[in-house]
Length: 237
Image (cartoon, helix red, strand yellow):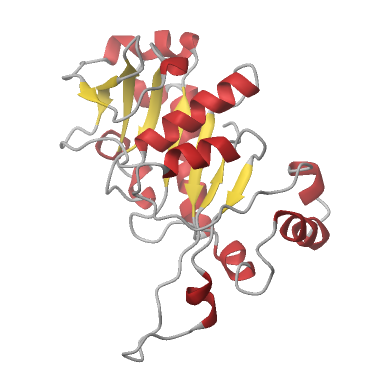
């Protein structure tokens, strides 16, 4: 079967495009990963051209030997549907969970999302806690959710209650509520560990910036501050 014709690949592409259509991905913002089922791997294995093993940067033995479909670093969600092979890739994790290699995709060069360690650590946690049921980690920037972080107290219970009351579907979709991640610089080495720990208890995590970024609308130069929030979920395709 041609790789892009596999149902799980079509679902991945649709999810990426749906996020773009919702306005959740400015430029190359956000990323997406899917833990592929063994039967799905067999459907497309004839297309594999394995590349060199690369270090993950962390250890994830809980997902050792598995395959993941992921967006590429610096790639735009907008372009996934236009040219999947240039913007996404499938990777294989070695048995120890310490290395990965691209087996399909990123035909013009590149590497998986720079947040791959965080994705894989979160996948490892959710696989263990849900007996393998949850297979997707999604990171986006929903404008409405970002706006709420400026007007609501950044507390799990309050945030969850307000979201539940805004639409009747919300308590059905996420009955356990949402978790608000306290501020950490994304590229600090311990950030993935913190995200993975949170996802033990939460399916959805709106992140936040320091309090000083919420109180002041402009910096010393008079220019608006750049504000962004982190939205991560583990819904299945």
